Length: 296
Image (cartoon, rainbow, N blue to C red; front, side, top):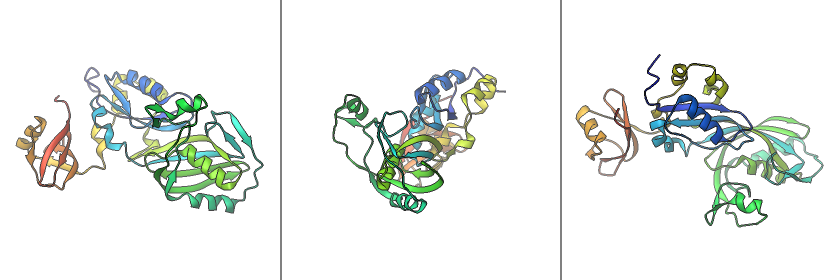
């Protein structure tokens, strides 16, 4: 069953319910696993549910490996209502009669596929002069927001019933689904807000792989540890570099060395396939250790 007193290092995939904050879910998972450190690789608003990728112990050193990964969501829009925050948590600020056809909706979705310039929501954590935008919005202050280039790789209509629209979206880092919902509503001329959101994937991780906090609580500490993925799962998309024992020992001591590898960031392993850390290979073939797994 494994040593339940050993340090907890790994990746935990949680199916977050709508309601609690991402940090509340993170802290509960950390406690259930008995981990010394924990962090997630991308927050979900309290309203949102779905996949939350949690790094525990030494895995927190490498969570940056998927911070830039694409994500996918299932979203529900309510047409004809705009809210203060762009989602169901905010007060309704306008009502408009909805006279939208399916063909008009499909045309609007087509307009937002590909690379687009997106204006972040007023209620977002993006900083302006050191303060998040939502801090200004809550005080009724309007500050300039710069549009950001994001990529909508897939945008598919899944449901259209009355004033409710369900769609699936796969997008790049930094895409606000709330802003996308509002933009689609504006394109249709009736306004809209994000009524519900579920994150379906983060990089290589998908929601069916995840477990709930309730399921974790129902099993033993040893069984909880068995739900962990190895921390190198965070680096699946990275080029892999395997070192022979003498070089592996030098790498673990933080020494640079010449290697036969293309330049760029690499996930480094020993000959026994044991993960050692991450490094950077320069144009001359010199490997510089950047972040090392603590010696066990």
